[in-house]
Length: 376
Picture (cartoon, helix red, strand yellow):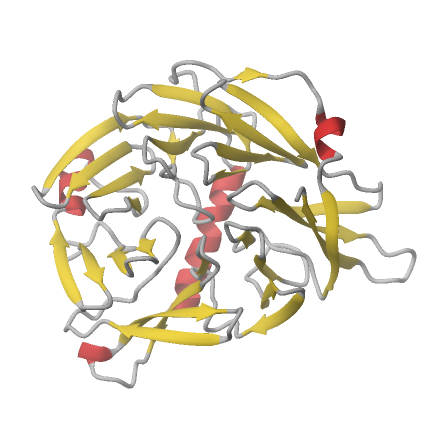
C-alpha cells in the first residue's frame, strides 16, 4: 500500500512540474531588486561536498532550521521512485531504510525525521503509528494510534506539529463517502473528528486531488489548499469552515515546509494559468484576504523570520514582506558538463545545499554529488 501511495505522490509531483503556472488574479506584484547575485553569492562558502551513488531526487531534499541536518533521497537517474535515503548530521552521512523513510517522510525544522509505520499483522486498534528519529542521537520514538480506524497515516510538514505531536489525518481518497479528516494528539491518544473535508466538498463538489492541510501552532485552526478550487480555513473549536480564496488555477505546495508562514499571517500558494511552464508563488494575507504575488520558482520555503525563500532553476531568492522585494541571495554556478538536480535552503537562511550530476567522459559513467554551503 505504501508503494502505491509513493507512486501516487510521484505522479502528482510530475503533474505539477509539467503544468504551466502564472497568475493574473493576484494583487500587488513583487518588485524585483537589482541583480547583485555575485555580491550575495560570495557570502556563502562551501562547508562540505559529498559524493553520491546517484542524483538527488525532487522529493525529500530538506535542511533543518539551523542548517545542521540535511535529508535527501536519490535514485540512479531519470524519473522514478527513490532508491536510497540518507541524512547528513555532524559531518557524517547515515544511510536510512528506504521502506521506513519513504516518499511521505519528512524532516522537521527541529531536525527530527518523521514517518509512519503500518504493522498489518497487528490488530486494527494498534496497527498504525508515527515514528520520530533523531539522527543526532540515533534514538527513535513511536506513537501508535490506539483506535479502530484502519487508516494509513501520512505525515509531512504542515500536517504534523512535532512540538505538540499532533497530526491531521489526510484521506488520500477524498471523494469516497466514508472519507474523513481528524486531529490526533499522539502523546495522549486523543482524536478530534473534523467536518472540514465534507464542508469543502459541499462547497467545491468532487475534488480532483486531496486537500493539502496546514495546522497552526496552537492547534486552533486548520487551513486547506485545494487543487483547482481555493483556500479554506477550519476553526477546530467552533467546527466552522470558511472559504478564504476561490481560485480555479490554484495548486497546493509540496511538503518541504508548511506553507503557513511562521508568523501565521500568510498562506503561500502557487498558480498555473499560462503555458510558460512556470510556477508563480503568491501569499494570501489571512487577516485581510488580500493576495500578493511573490515571484516565479520551482519550490518555496517559509523561513523562520516570516519571509519566504523561492528556488528558481539555479537561483535561491528571498522575498521580504516588509520591502516587498524579491532578491537573489545565491546562484549555483556549474560547468557545462554538469546538471543541477535540486536546491534547498535552511529555514534560518544560513545554509544552502544543492545536488548536481557530472556527465562522464566517453565510456565513463555519470557521477553525482551534493554541496553544502553556509554564510556563518
